Length: 117
Length: 117
DNA sequence: GATCTAAATGGATGGCCGTCGATCTGGAGC
DNA sequence: GCTCCAGATCGACGGCCATCCATTTAGATC
Image (cartoon, rainbow over all chains, first blue to last red; front, side, top):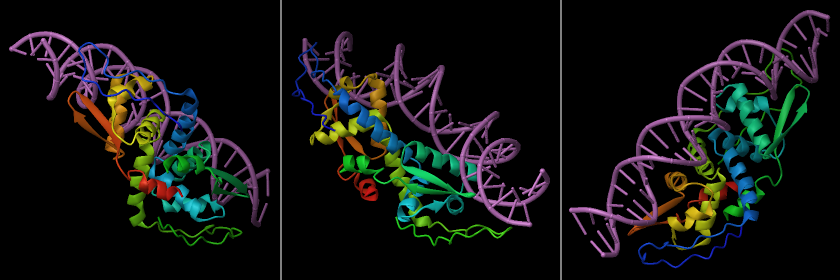
């Protein structure tokens, strides 16, 4: 995310003059920002964050019916959160008979984690 | 975030029986999840993410008037985003005369970054 | 096929979010 | 003190979000 701007030196505001130069933001980086922000937004709910946490902790897949009793929300609400996480590309699911098993997509958090450090 | 659950072994659903054990979620971790999710939520907007990115890139402080022209939103909107970031504890500001200078709070992303990896 | 069940979907609702234009605030210069 | 300016705040608006209950879907059992 190479947002390297040439910052204008602080001026003493000679009346009627701009205090700093306008700067151009590189369009290339904007799409990466949109991608990362989308992931962050999906993680911006305590329940979804804990869902991802639980799923990451269990390398294997976790059944929805194991997840529902962990939280104080209804089954449809939890299903909604899982969908949000799926749409953000963070988790995916696999149906096995009656049950649905969720898992964290490998490297799904790679880009955002890299940006953070 | 030690959410260690004893996952019940998958059963063949002997009619009229629960498919898995109810599990208790440790209350202690919930507050940490709320904190991290709050930071993630603040980063869940492309403009705010780019704001943080720009501020992190410049170790020093950046004047608001240098930030506004970077984005396609009005000055009040940008001010609103900066306030959101401030409320999340990610950035802080310092007034110097007419100008306001923003900077990333050191270690503000430490907890969420640690959780991600 | 009839019945039971896990999970997803639909519809409704109250609340928060991003954005804007207009206005307020307070520091600087004259 | 008056004026000008950077930045914050206000009020409004349309849209999305989290949640619920009711229903549907798809699979398994009998």
